[in-house]
Length: 394
Ligand SMILES: Cc1cc2nc3c(=O)[nH]c(=O)nc-3n(C[C@H](O)[C@H](O)[C@H](O)COP(=O)(O)OP(=O)(O)OC[C@H]3O[C@@H](n4cnc5c(N)ncnc54)[C@H](O)[C@@H]3O)c2cc1C
Image 1: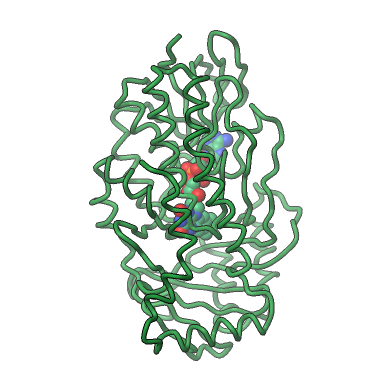
Image 2: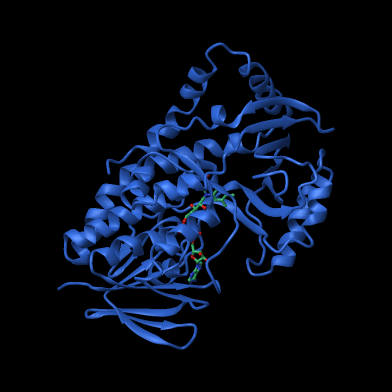
């Protein structure tokens, strides 16, 4: 019983990375993506630890490195915009070895370009329904097309529809905050610099990859779970603008840009933690199965590494999906568990909850600069991240 025909739902990071390995192992791969084309832009993401080894094995690390954001400085400002502390980004990011930071859109394009000739990409479509039968999964697409596949992979992100089709409603676990990101004119003239401003439970940040490039603006706010329509972008923009009201620094200008920006991202900071990643012939990958949340900075790395492991198990078992899925779970579980735990721990640091916590953070940043062993201090603080990022052997 060999499974050779694979359908992947989602052409973000996990989907194309899996397509890369499966097509090279001789599987026929179809990737269905709801968006009309590969999604450009986005925010900056880290690729760390084991995932950098995966990128290297793909032969894509050099190209990804060439698109490194090259961020130079992280600055913390007061309500009036006065710099409280300014530190080299390389120090705060505590990169090790081949770790890199890249715009998610650049990484997505690199992965798409490396797979578009071998996998059959179908943009502007989605799985509308699937029935898992002994001989394969019968799939109906929103476009009306139908197909039969030996394996279906849900790589369709935090709110995965494939997960819903195969497992029923599994709500992501809300970690108590929301994040919005959009583009705004770079009126600050920042060049490879990130600027942060915090008030209790709210954080505004902006960065740009060049003084002549638009800024990416972000807003994070603590909140219990909110009821809103995930398809209603206008309502989400209103919600974000309301949450930003009264916040200092340039927040009002950034909020004004919200109305006209074409690239608005808004979501809860949530995790997906499933007791099992497969059901019959359907298997979950990346955020769809194990989203550690943006607070961890590890979602992209888990997606890349998970794709490598899942493809390896499918190739090793010649597509015997029960054995392959069991091997995938065995290899990935401890690594995923460490990263989920790290994400839960970090969410509080992302949005300081009180004036005292902000003052404490600002004091730490101001004095760190003059600390004779600052690299060692940061190394110690980031040790749990590096441990999580390397908690699997490739
Ligand atoms: C603000 C922010 C900062 C982040 N920073 C980092 C970081 O520093 N480091 C890091 O590792 N990670 C970071 N992440 C997380 C990272 O972006 C994700 O974990 C990563 O992209 C997961 O990849 P994925 O392919 O599983 O999901 P996604 O990248 O979400 O891709 C899913 C794809 O599926 C498509 N899709 C959705 N529904 C359907 C459907 N029904 N049918 C077909 N297609 C569908 C989507 O359009 C999308 O293209 C961050 C995330 C955010 C929001």
